[in-house]
Amino acid sequence: MKTQQSLGTLSLMLITVGSVDSIRNLPAAALSGDSILLYFFVALTCFLLPTAVISIWFANRHQDGIYEWVTVGLGARKGFLAVWFQWMQNILIYPTLFSFIAGVSLFTLAPQLAENKYALFLIINALIWFLTWVNIKGIYLSVRLNTFCTIIGLIIPFLMILAMGIYSVLSGYHPEGWQASGGGHGGWSSLTAIILSLCGVEIAGVHSRESTAGAFTKAIILAVPVIFLTMLFGTLTIYRLIASAQLSLVNGIAQVVAIFFSKIHGRQFAGLFNLLIVIGCIGCANNWLIAPVKGLLFSMSHADKGERLLTRSPEKLLLIQAGCVSLLSTLFLLLPAINASYWLMLVLATQMYLLMYSLMFISAIRLQLSGKQPVQPMILFFSALGLLTVIVLMLVSFEPPSLIDSGSRLHYGLLMGLCLLFLSFASYWGREKWLNKRPIL
Image (tube, helix red, strand yellow):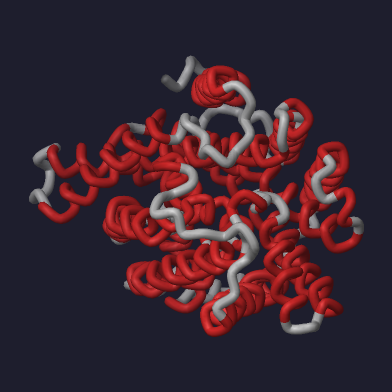
């Protein structure tokens, strides 16, 4: 048996940055308008730093990721619930990821279809079922291919987008209709998109057991400023190059690319740049397709070692996951505008992640107050700050930004509330169906 090579600081940092940094989040974050700096500062101090600090604290003591972190403080049932929320977040984010891929592709190949709901719906379903089939057949991306996709689809495009921002500042370029209004276009609800763009720093915690001593801590310390600065300056670039009223959450990046290459008289390169982004996003999607499923199965087997799982392999869960993504993609057909559909799924995904984080923070607080170990004021402070931030964000996320055409606000609020309740209480069905046990809650 070959000895597994330990993951070092650089590997864990790349895993963290590659998992969190996402170009597709930039247009939604840009809805904050000229309040971008304020909202990013709030997100950094009240959310990103608390999640990073608590993740480091847990990873240094428990090496099996979010499931074990919640389990040690709140029990196996709540640990399962945390992984369930993480899986639900993954399901909800896939329609937005695939719609982004579809939007960039259509904007490049057939601009007249870029805002066509039916074209997006078909491409989303084609992608999710194709990648599901690939994973069921046992074909997966190697570490080398994942690294290639990260470089091609993340690092190079991000550097180019930052170059676009520098160009807009040096040239004094502003699009027609652009203005600094002195306030955010989406109110505090647009903070939701920024928070989602910073979620996931804990993801590399599942690799703590395979990493060298202290590597996770160093990786997070290095990754946090990289993630924060790239997302901040990338968002500022989108804001400077596209008037908010014309910004598409699906095609925003393609819009920026078209504007930039048009200004430098290099339109022929815009298609190539968009292709790089699409390749990177497809690689990311395939890489993430099975990870939460495996985490869910691990939590089940860990909690009920004597029970027979639905299956030893994740095929059925992958099919359920694909079916859920297909069902959610119908929102693109039901809501009045593509931006509204995109925003609804983005907010629901954020809420799922926030519920997971709330369990993580509560677990840390309970461990600190249990009396079994000395109280660490810094851990208690960041846990309480993170939990308070999660509660506030859950409340403000129900109001869509003013620039999002969501139809009736009452209809939108009811739809979001029903979706949130359904996803939260679906854990009852999941627990009984897969483990034949009583409900988790």
